[in-house]
Image 1 (cartoon, rainbow, N blue to C red):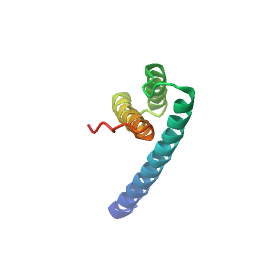
Image 2: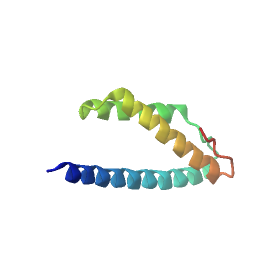
Image 3: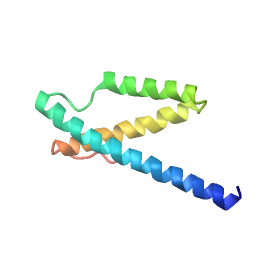
Length: 95
């Protein structure tokens, strides 16, 4: 493969990543609805820790920088929490 073909492959990966983030956000909206019906808080530190630990474990499994993955998933969780806040009529925290 030449450089341009490799860059095109990266762009395809980027598209897939964005698509998966969109899917994750839609699931977060559904989670907000369920939490609302159950009277649960949006922020769940136990669940947050489970997600981070799972991502860190997968990073090790795939030999990817664990700290970078933790940072990425921390951001993804924050995005999900923002979607859930909006779903409840709250304001999104822009950071």
